[in-house]
Amino acid sequence: MTTEHRSLRSELAALTTEAFRPELAEIDTLPTLDIARLMNSEDAGVAGAVALQLPQISAAIDAIAARMAQGGRLVYAGAGTAGRLGILDASECPPTFNTRPGQVVGVIAGGPAAMVTSVEGAEDSAELARTDLDALGIGAADTVVGVSASGRTPYAVGAVEHARALGALTVGLSCNAASALAAAAEHGIEVVVGPELLTGSTRLKAGTAQKLVLNMLSTITMIRLGKTYGNLMVDVRASNEKLRARSRRIVALATGASDDEIEAALTATDGEVKPAVLVILAGVDGPTAARLLEETGGHLRAALTATGG
Image 1 (cartoon, rainbow, N blue to C red):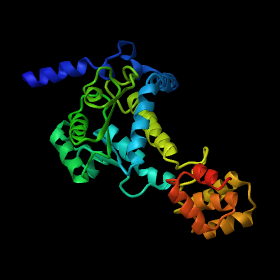
Image 2 (image 1 turned 180 degrees about the vertical axis):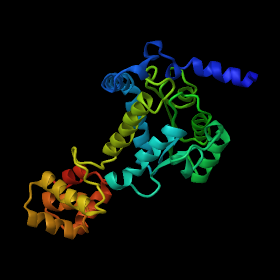
Image 3 (image 1 turned 90 degrees about the vertical axis):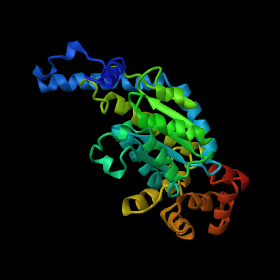
Image 4 (image 1 turned 60 degrees about the vertical axis):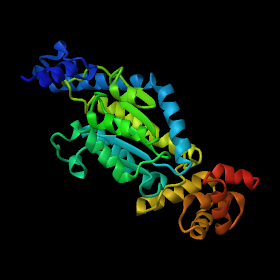
């Protein structure tokens, strides 16, 4: 074993996410129901670990929203499970919040192929992270969120370090305390969920914790940007029949209008929910609703206030 391998082995052994649990050494001999109960019990503690980081999460969200309000992008960078979770969150923003192309992006060590296949050595390359961010033209208006369960993955740490050098806002999300990733970022979020049921399998509790935090980062940022009205997704993109039906229901919930009024308003606004709500509640026409929303930065509540609604 080389000195480098010994050093890495020692480094991993010191991580909470890699810790061995002797009490589970015979888990493979247990009945299936008992294993399921164990896993369920483990998962139950994840939300509590996230709760301990809510002040850090909230501070990061406010900073992200401020940049995005000025036209900046939200970029997730990670390897393996962490990278896939970032891409998942980014891919769900256009249909949910009608974000513009490239406004929320996920990059993964090894590129698109790494979504379904392990790309050997990619996570160990900080240089690869720099190349991926440079391809996006990262600048001071943008936010880069490095995601890594261990908090030491060179790709994630390298992405954050490079983004910070470029003047971008940086967030480091990990599942170990005192991580290199959190230290490298302006906003460190360390959700310590403890050792995994299967030693080192960080797609389990750590992956769940990362998904919960990414849900918060994107969803609450979009709320701050005015892409919801109350708890209604008024910026939803009606790209299929299910979403078109959801659009009508959202307008109905927001306004209490009749089906005929809803259809007329959606026709007047080319199927866009937010201006349709404004048409009904403020009694304006489609072009006026669009103008009011543009003047208020897309905030429906502010547009309604401007009309006295």
